[in-house]
Image (cartoon, rainbow, N blue to C red; front, side, top):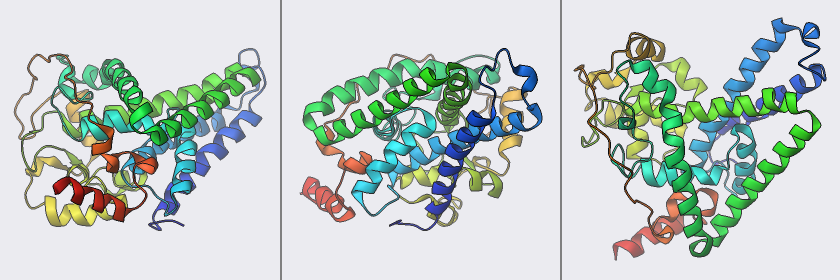
Length: 334
């Protein structure tokens, strides 16, 4: 059923997220506020951190799914998108407009709703902490406008989006009715962390890079440990060049097609070392090591395309098969 065996890891960590969330829900006392003395913090805190981490991994899996669906069956991919929507608290289909069609096609321009030039704090740690909040209004406006356009132009995609959103809403309301304290701590907080994390990664991957360059538009984190936990999403340049390439193939493709050409500073061996230098020490720099402060940013520009011209970007509802996508591109070319 899987297109790539490597996605057994994806399924495992999604299942682990739900299992740990359910376990902690059952094991915690019914009244978290008044029964705090009964909480065994020694195991509750590590388990809660693990839930946050796997929720973020679910957001990374969402990113992967809208570029390269994991199942051979279109129906299974639609179900998978519903499941992923529950792992990080947002409909998977809504990832398409802000990420695939805005960020990927118009990286770091005013048509990119997640461009890093939106924040200009002198202390760089503030830029990475508040980037998510600065981008949310733009993302929500883009999602709403694109969804409205798709309702008539691509109703199947819109129905999938609506089903994901409705499922998420029903589950969320049910959990808050069941126990609002646990729902807040175990459902909402990990989801907010996952959403903050997946959007904020743009700062690490693009800030100070050359968006006009063929190779130097993205920063890569090539350490084996971080890429094991993030499904090789540290290899970001090759992802922009070949967004439909499965994550398990990106290290080899990066080594062959990207590494010989990019500036050496754009292959960061340690994510933690980069975070310390760029955010704790506050050194906001260009990819070649020069002090960097982006120019004053203007408002977002209109970018929403005709959905019929970009079926390859719409996740499980976008194309019936790879052959159909190839045929569609051939028709456009002719």
